[in-house]
Length: 125
Image 1 (tube, rainbow, N blue to C red):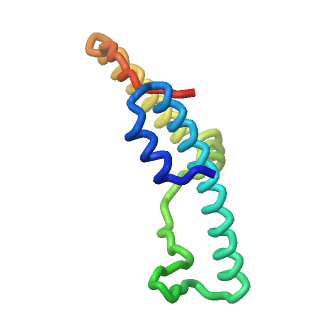
Image 2 (cartoon, one colour):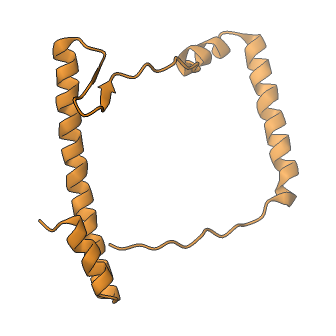
């Protein structure tokens, strides 16, 4: 397997598009292999945490690892909301009025809508 330094040196050495595309493809392949390796390493750390019951730890070289503590977020339960609307004439009216107002706003916005071209980007396949 070619090393990062070797690819970098080749890119500096050869100043042509053929070499650049070949180096790009090699780097992409390395990136995929490193992603697989990272996943395997993370799985090993996760297994260790589950087996030991630890929530966090620190390596001998000062790197910490552990579980995050995500904060709860509020999310609409679509199924419950839909059932509530279906079973409540007041909510049906409210939702209907909201949708009607949204359609009116969209109609009023039409004269102000303009087409914006996307930005071209490089691809290498």
